[in-house]
Image 1: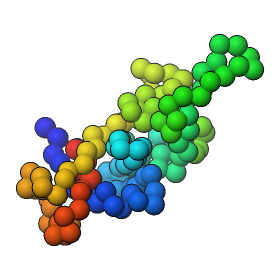
Image 2: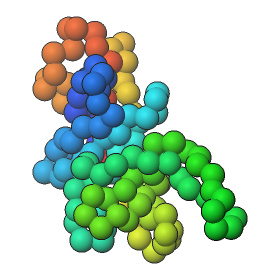
Image 3: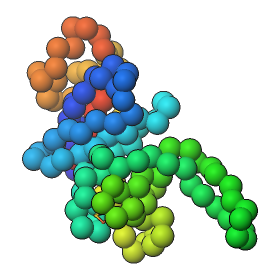
Image 4: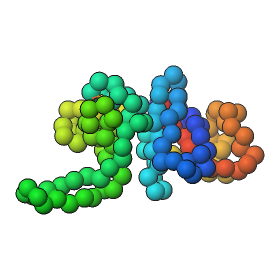
Length: 137
Ligand code: FES
């Protein structure tokens, strides 16, 4: 069963859309996309590139050459090493879904009112009543 780990305050994401944290010795990258949160192991399944350093781009669809449509803005992560692309919702590789996948990690937000449900809160000063980012691993 996955344990919940408090890794950051929501306010830590005010100036960025991502944050690299370590949980149980594993590097986890957390993405904030609007009001949604996603996480994955910070290791590309191709050759181990740092996914935290990748670009968040749109999905591109096309029915014929010269005609394309952009959708799902910021939901596709491009690895900085060789350009493999992953769906940040599922970790699936866009070109080979079902074959390659960045390992997804559950991320949620815990309101200050619910802080008693997580065991490692001593890492953070919750007296500020800040909402917290929680990784399940
Ligand atoms: S290591 Fe990520 S695409 Fe090669």
